[in-house]
Length: 274
Image (cartoon, rainbow, N blue to C red; front, side, top):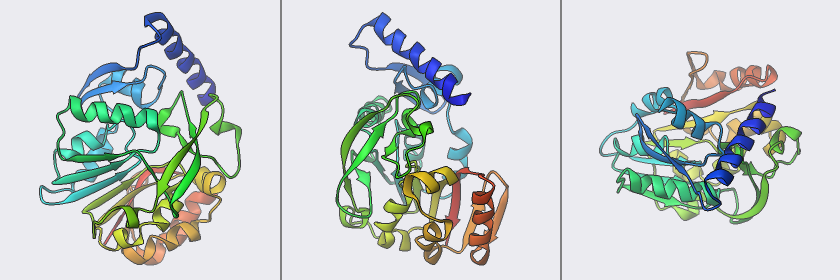
């Protein structure tokens, strides 16, 4: 039902583009988090910003406690900047990776609209090896754009996403940073591959906030909870799961996330800390 609703809403956005003109790129939303250029076809983040004037405010509040004026932040999967813009105001420097070229264009516009001068935006995917990957550019939910899933479930293709090739890098090779105060990662199933390529960065980082969705592990990367945690557990000692309002110690990471995986329970951003 959700996918059907998103399909219908995306069609409405497409008709709006056709009505206002084929050269329409975006609409501007005035929000609590700043000014944002959004694609009318995007019915998740874009719709929330246009209709409610905010998106992810609770997540921003959770993350801000790891940010200070002398700390740097890394966001992998920056989308159009709804997290990047408010976080940039709290830190020294922010590096934002966004693989989708259409979304990256809006991210760049939004950084200028909000006069953000301490953010370096990069149009590359984070991966375990340097090269290129097949990538789905979702229409109804541009934030759901992702690398080509290894198991091609219909849920990833309902809005007829365009398939393109995007350049990918290992973040340890691409970035000279020894560590960030905060790393935020939301890349729709590519987390395992990105984490594999940034072990040096994680070693020096204070906290990692990463999306955890069982269907992404199962279908997009085809990795187990154990494989996912093997790249994180050596670097962090506690895990907070906001949706469950619990914080656990390292010895319980595997059992807790495995139970969530088995029950198909996800969280937009579980937080690992030193």
